[in-house]
Amino acid sequence: MFRGYLRLLLFTVGLLVGVQVPGLVKDYGQRVEAHLLESREALSGFQETAERFFNGDLQALLRHYRGSDDPVFVSDANSIESLMVRNQLLENEWQSLQGSWAARTWHVLVQADPALRQETLNGYSYQILLVPEAIGWGLGCGFLLALLVESLLLGLGWLALGGRRSAVKESWR
Image (cartoon, rainbow, N blue to C red; front, top):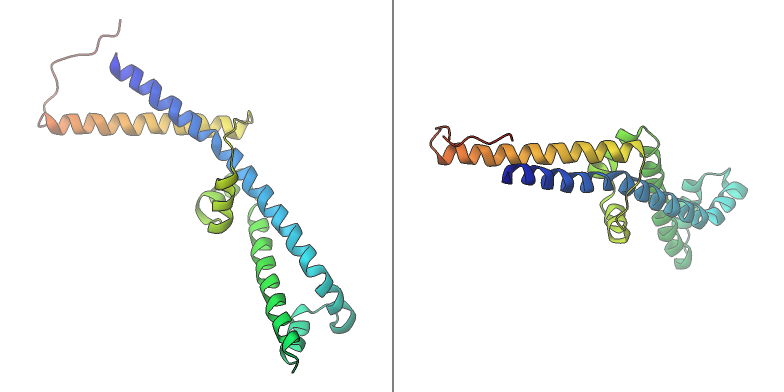
């Protein structure tokens, strides 16, 4: 009887953890999109200047600023470069989130930018989305957690008994 309740408890915990995955992926995508829009807006003035004087080439504008004798322009070159690097990072993250739900999930869980992932986790509020992906993740995680923990406990019990089977059988009534 205890094993049955333990199985249910583990399944429920796994289910509740699993249904969080799609919500976390969604929140991460929204965070990346918001930062990307801000980044594009911050670069827009410099992009306009590059359009007007350098045929839209921000790198040429950056080289022009770096080549200046004016320390203000050199300092601005560092700022522009920082904005460009940040924008490229966010563009890459955004592109990574345009694939299938499995690719997006894999990216967020394994390959995401650590700072953006941590920012997302810090602002994340637990939610239960009733979408097929959340249901699938919940059932999969619940089953996997229950299976792994029960297998581990049975393996430890088998080792503790020296490989002998227990004489006590579980009642199926």
